[in-house]
Structures are given as C-alpha cells and as structure tokens.
Length: 267
Length: 242
Image 1 (cartoon, rainbow over the protein chains, first blue to last red):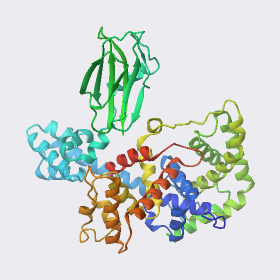
Image 2 (image 1 turned 90 degrees about the horizontal axis):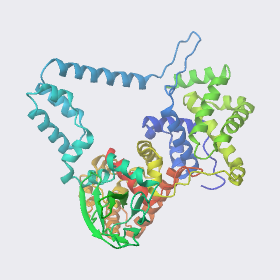
Image 3 (image 1 turned 30 degrees about the horizontal axis):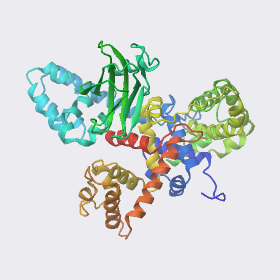
Image 4 (image 1 turned 45 degrees about the horizontal axis):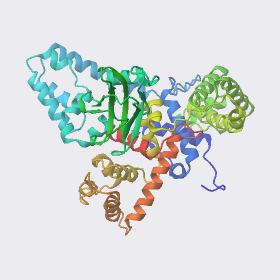
C-alpha cells in the first residue's frame, strides 16, 4: 500500500468484521475486499474487531427502535442456536425412548463428519451395539477415538494427533521443568525441558561426571515407549525418532530413579 | 436490509451512540485484547485516554455511523483504532521503563502454549479468507505441507477441478522435494489459470503469501511470534478441522 492510499473507514472495518464473523465475506463490497487483501493494517483491524464480536456477549447487535415504527432485531444467531438445540434434544429424546431404527442410524450417520472412513467406522460401532441400546445411543465416539481408527490410512490426521500432548507425561514434565537436578545430584541435565528441532538433528545432553550408567527412555505422545538406550556418556542422539511429532523422554539413573522428564517436538 | 440500515442510522442520530456504561464496557474489552502489549499498570490510563478521545470526537463518530453494521461492532472499530494510536504513542515510554516486559514468545512451543489453539485456528481461517487469492493460498499451502488435497478447498479454487484432474495433480507424495512440489503447483496454475508460469514464480508467490499470513497472525505490537514452522503446525490444525 502506498502512502497515498487511504485506509478503510471505521464503518468499513465494522462492516467487514461482521461479514467475516458470519462467514459472508463474499458479500462484502469488492472495494473493501481488494483493500483488505493488500493492506495488513486494515486486515488486522478487521480480524481484531471480528474477534471482539465473537467473544462479545452482546454480539447479537440489537437495534430496538422505541418509536412507533417497531423493532428491528437481528436474532438470527439466537434462532439458529435454539433450532440446533431443539433438534438435538429431539434426537436424544427419540433415541432414549426406543431402540435405534434404521432412520436413527442414518441420522446419526449424517451428523458425523464427512470423512467416509469415520462414517464407515461409526456404522460398525452402531450396528455391533444394536442390542445394547444404552451404549449405542448414549455414546458418541470422541473425535480423537474416531480419528485413531482411521489413522493408518489417513496420514493427514496423523500429523495433528502427533502433536497432541499426553496428560500424564505433561504433568511429569512440569514437575521437572524448574529443577534440573531433582535426584542424582551429580547429574545435571543441560537439555531444556522442551526441546524442539528438525528430524535427525536432535540430541539430549547432560553432565555425567561420574560416568554412571544411565537409561534414556523415549515415549510417543500416546505414552508408548518408542525406544530405550543405556549409556554412560553425556549425550544421546535421537536418530531412532523417524517422524515429526511430540515425544517425551525420561532420564533414569543406575538406581532406577527418574532424574528428569522432558519433551521433544520434532518438526 | 436497507430498512435495517436506515433504522440503525436513525437510532444513532437521535442521541449519543453509546451510553457512558456501554462505552466503558467496549473500551475495557478492547484494552483487554491488547493485554500482551499494554502493561498492567497502564491499562486504566489507556482506557481513560481512549474514552476521552472518543468523547472529544463523539459528534463526528456518530455522524460517520452509516448503519451498515451493528453499533457495537462500529464502536469496537472506532475504539480499536483509537487504542492503537494510544499504544503507538506510549509504546516508547513503556519500553524505556525498567520493568516493562512484553511477552516475547520467540519459540514455536511458547507461541502455541501461550495462545489457545482453537482461537488461533479461527484467526488463521480469517487471515486466509482476507488474503488475495484466498482459496488458491489454502490449496497451495496444503500441498506445500504435503497434506492431502480436500475437495472443499480445491473446488473453491477451480470449479472445473474434476475435468482438470486437480485432485490428482495436487496429491503430493511424502518423499518428494520442495522443488518438485513447486513443479506440481506450477502445472496446476498453468492448467487452471491458463498461464505459463515456472516453478520459481510459484515459489516466490507462495512464500509471499506465507509471509503475509505470518505477519497478520502476529498482528500489530507483536501479539505472537509466528514463523514458518509454527505457521505449518497451525495450518495443519486448521486444515484438519475443516
């Protein structure tokens, strides 16, 4: 943008922000759209105002005219939310009062994601649980569980799940995060609590002046041990990690006491 | 629609756009969103400064309200602009203060930990929509990151994607190099846009788009510290959600 080009007015920003929040940017004036594509400053303003709107309790911008011409309300978001709640409530009620019919199974299918594999898996789950209506109707497979079923054939989903944190291991990492000499006073861990870097370039470091036999265990973010190494040196290369993702590692001394737990983000 | 605009405008014209309480609430929310930049001790002053400026220009602000948006949204837009002005003016003084520490999340993990992933995904969606060639950017970034092409995005980029066999062209094998990816993408551009561009041109364009996305995600006053690596991670989260 050149200095001669004006920025959008506040009214333009507000209009664009509302369209952005509602997902109707294609209905925005072409002049504004072109400007936003070229001007970072105005684009940031629009994004910011749109975010404010979305967290605003009063996003349903009501304009109530107190004159005799009546009221103009924009309650579409409320109606949409209410409709969805009514539909969901009806579905749940129907499912509770009878065993699932083919129609209900079909409805359940259509409310799932569009991923065909997941729909196929969901089918199997419903049909196999047909005799147990409580389980069938009450249990909605969690997105993470559904995704795991198709993970073998869906490398795309694998990428996101590869970085999901493991609650138990995260808690361990936090415990050791501020104190790198928890146990095994002679051994001092140099690697930071969170180590990030590209594949094949990561290594773990510590000071092991007495050359104690140390065990290094590396876990996936699912809590499964990936590999274990024993060494009396001060470092270990992480060449056995073959794919990007989030991993955890533990350093254990010769008394089998855990000295440190950290995490590794492989890009 | 015109009726709604006219009625909003008339309501605004008849009195002050916002009551004092409404103004305070809006200003508060704007200031809170800049909490990463405005020191805690300064926030009240900034808020008062914003309100003072708003009130001094109240008539013009009310006049400029055309009713094309809700009045709260308009209020946010006005107050945000005023707030940015205040921050630019005061930033140097804050930085010179010995205790001032802007949250300098320089590492990817800090960026992702500090900010809610869900909000960031939503923000990335908005950043992409507002960019030039939004659909093309999304499709090309997905290919660059070796993610499987998704019909919903490809169809928005090219209505004739089936005839042009775009899904096959955009399917990138995991083992191939970046150079080969750009070759594939240049073929896609030439098919869809009937041009004759080389892979270098596609590389430069895509790099530029990613820089714009990073800049807009980081926002003014260094809201975050996205870089190419963290953009990739965020994009993958975003892409999976769609």
